[in-house]
Length: 326
Image 1 (cartoon, helix red, strand yellow):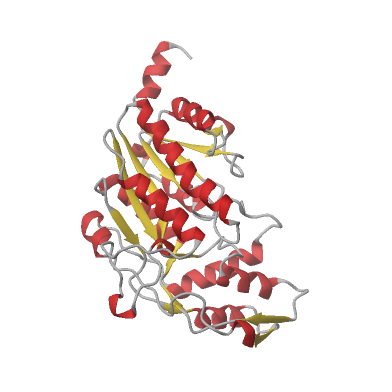
Image 2 (tube, rainbow, N blue to C red):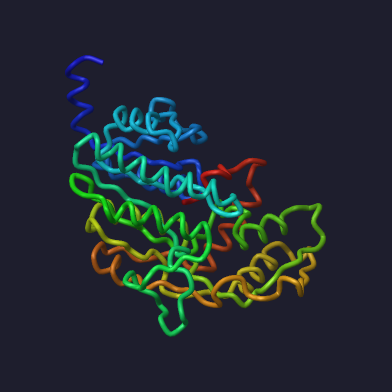
């Protein structure tokens, strides 16, 4: 690359995205590649290149290997980093800690060693909070975190690493509640329901508790929230990303059942009929709304319908099951 080309490239902002093949990755790439050309170049990094992504904008790296991460950061020279890569249940605990906690620490170390200003958006999870009394809902960012699952602990450790970062790193945490929409993985209840209803070989679906309520936020709204934080967020803060309202899981099941034509018979499994996790969960989103202007736009019913339509058109391998969303 000649000197003039190198100078031109150094002046163009670079957004680096990890986990770009996952559930959140594709909507974020779509949003970053929109009409706003001022966002500059978008580079993805990970074990494999996202489908249909140009090879010249991909850096192959093992995010759990310090040398590999350091080399990727030097090559990309990012001004903004969206860290989406990680693992979710049912991955075993050692893999969760390695992919979520250690990989985040290595990424932050590599960025710090480079010594250049960079804004970093880490994707957290509501699982970091642990049990929250209904009297404390909607839950704000100041609520103490008491995670009770390996996944929640692994994400909380990553958040702690981000909050401890010092300049020139400008780190913000997007604590995402329950993303839904096109690409929802089968490890999540509504993703599993949609996949089962669309499978012609399935005649019966056995389900557990349907009265659990969760703050479901559309994955495309989440992508916009991440960009809003990169543009307007304040370093050193956690931002809850949700809708501020909760929806009954059973209502999502019923909508998917109607959309499928009701061919599959739904039965309740008494062994798993008890609620898994808190009965209700919803986020206080005033901080991100007030500080960035972001707010959720896509209605819950539209998210469920778009999930169904995407599952109907889904090829045999649609998303990276290792890097699901965070």
